[in-house]
Image (cartoon, rainbow, N blue to C red; front, side, top):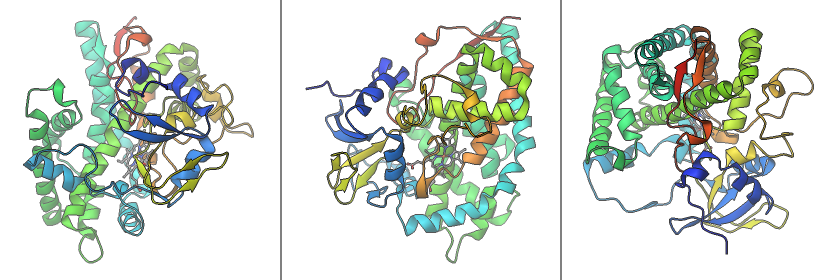
Length: 412
Ligand code: HEM
């Protein structure tokens, strides 16, 4: 009987890939016992991952009373309300919510954020350079990879500049494990965010801005989003957008600092090369390790003798699909060349998911990385890691993946 999988184990969190590779040898999906006493089906094959994500027999709606029962509190009620977003819904609800949001998230509007992203990233890189001058060492996650996505979501939601420090602080608290902060701090941050977004919606209704969120608020009403859906949407954009992009930026910096030849090629190679670096980081590091949980509404035969029963919890492990050797030769190597143009270009990675829930922010995330990474390394070309890669702490769990801190110094 194999040991139950403990996603909180620091060694697994840092390098889950050997485990996923072993699991893949048992078939494209395998039933796994988890350390919390439950069990789940983990999908590790690339082709099957895409099939599952496009198959309506795998539902996104969390079962009633999912997870451990939580005591009733204002923060708990806020959490429950905010969980009513499109990622937790199936068609036809999902189609309605997504259609309204896609209308606000057009490529033209996302691309228009480029100068603001460059401005915000330049400010953070200046701050990081200042810290390095002063202290000789700094945490790249804290100074760059975490704040940039939060500030960019601030732009998308039209959060005024003067409120961004508070947004950053609440987001940090809500995303921290409860035992890392003083008692009650996480709950208090949930309530503050909830109250803040409720007031923001009112404000956007009275005086709409140029931001994407104002468009959603203005389109609300007849057939549009109701107030609870708008609130849930603000939360979804914040949480789908910040931790994932933070992991993309942190993993990109780590991979480039540990592959100086690739960094030099990127710095010489211009936009196309940087775009290939971003794609390869997405594939290699998979900032979202697994998608959100799915539940089978009926038994599903995945072929090759793998049948998943009805009512099973299923996790599509994007990190495993993205290293499936049948689709990506030498999958554990970091090789941005795979995503340069030409007939040999690698298969598209699955880091942004697939099918009806395909990431709505993919264009924005790619833009953030493509703008911010060259800026970082042009301004700080002598940056180097100040800790061994094998010592870095990683986020626990099966859902997100990335270093929690990245100590750097300037060797120049
Ligand atoms: C590197 C950064 C990102 C990664 C790797 C990522 C990945 C993903 C993945 C895999 C999904 C599908 C999850 C599932 O099927 O269970 C998803 C959905 C979503 N993402 Fe992202 N994401 C990123 C950044 C963003 C950003 C910046 C935003 C918005 C500001 C965003 C908004 C969303 C939304 C709204 C959904 C739900 C779509 C739906 O249910 O139809 N994401 N993302």
